[in-house]
Image: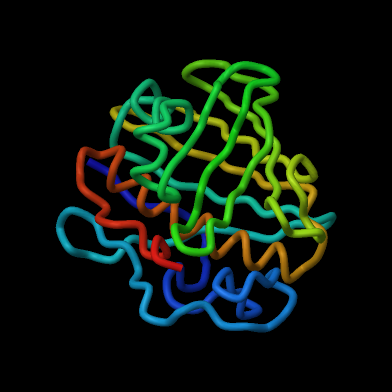
Length: 203
């Protein structure tokens, strides 16, 4: 059974590029540091998962994973609030239909929230939603777009995620770092494992 990912990328855990800090209420451009010690996610066998992302011109990043689960299973982790919060954030409010709410609480103490609306929902192949940060002027809700395409691959699924409309290179680096971390957690959850507590829950 093939697992893992493609391309080349940096570390998913640890310090965010540009040193973002939810604790101080700053955007990623301001240079404060995330709390250190966020570990890279591990697979069920305890081996590190490889990462994949690339930055694109025009404020976009693309990431690819292969998950050893069918598209129907993987799709459910993008539209079911309980399943979504297993791999990203500490809670999710999802209404997976065009115009429906997309809202994910990322941290407990500082209450950082990513929100937008669903634009397209095509089970089990594709989901598109807008994305921004409540209270962050440089990237408010609805400004950027996340497109997820799921392709069946034997007994697994290739996940292609593209996040476009990001305002700067630093923002691209920050979001690539965050998506790398959380997609690794999705790999574990989607394959029936336990990714553990969200590493930034207590910020």
